[in-house]
Length: 127
Image (cartoon, rainbow, N blue to C red; front, side, top):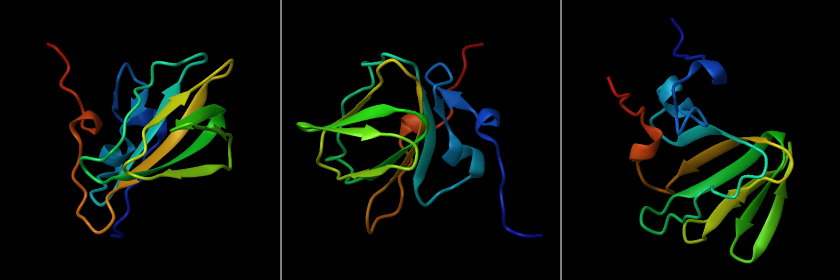
């Protein structure tokens, strides 16, 4: 049998109220992070963060809708077909205006084994 795993974005587990789709977990990927993030219109609460502590670089691409990627003083418009790589030390934040966005996020640390962060693991649901 071929070494292949197939899933659909709406069939994988999700965190943060269903907004953070655990694609990496659903496909059992261990070499890099991959998630789909569904952001509602007029969102400015996406956490600003960097990866100085783990050296991870990230790539973002909008699958549907549009969003703005804030990196330092720059604002990059993300629309379908646009890819943006952000280095580990750069503070980044994603915001939306009047439309929602479905964002593909990929991450990994160059030259290092991937260490799965807790936020991208399935969260235990209260009983």
